[in-house]
Image 1 (cartoon, helix red, strand yellow):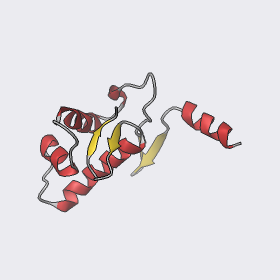
Image 2 (tube, rainbow, N blue to C red):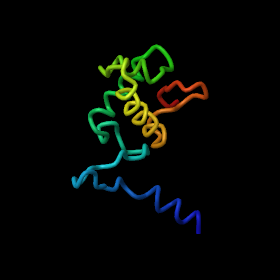
Image 3 (cartoon, rainbow, N blue to C red):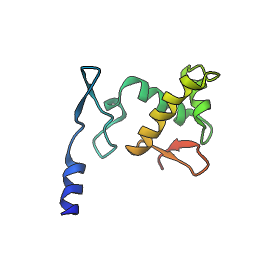
Image 4 (cartoon, helix red, strand yellow):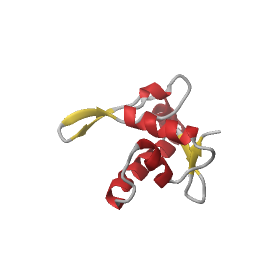
Length: 104
């Protein structure tokens, strides 16, 4: 049964969700045939910033690259949340020390 559920989840495409009464597309899982252009623009910028870094980066460094005011923690936390969401969906990788990198 769990194998069947896992298979159904992996074959399902991104499902639209409701946020503030508006329909929005959730971040799709990375799989063959799904390119970065399937991501919202701000997530594409985040991946580009991580990719262009010389190595693994902290959320603060990504914030500097994409223009987030990193001196205000309340503005950095939404970015960190987006980074973690990209990790959960397979677009990025989070190292044990908390830094982010592109998947190998």
